[in-house]
Image (cartoon, rainbow, N blue to C red):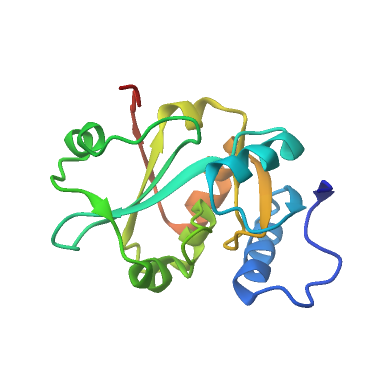
Length: 181
């Protein structure tokens, strides 16, 4: 894996959702570093990518309430354990579960394995509430996918909070996850 500044020189063979991500970031003037890799469909693969990027890739979980009326994108450190009960009490939503792949595609234009904050650019109706663990918010950089699981980005957290989120019209709710047994 190599580390590059910005978008690929050629977008031939890349999915439209990935190219739209680069277009969006470039339009906002948000610098980023990128690496291409095999599909990163588990945290072990992400840890290898972390080394190349020099940042911890966030664990991104797409969640919903039991009635499927509220949807959430949770960003948390990749090495933290997720406990539903711990989060449910902070957002006043009982019975959280993983949302369906169909809903992920409908709201974020992302498929399983590629869930990322970048998908919020596709949520123009603001159906998804962003939840960020306070530890992610404290880091200088965020690692995420550009809406595909075969590339990863390194962006400044400040750029995400002050440029990207305002452009998408989303606000982050900061949560505190202990993640211990």
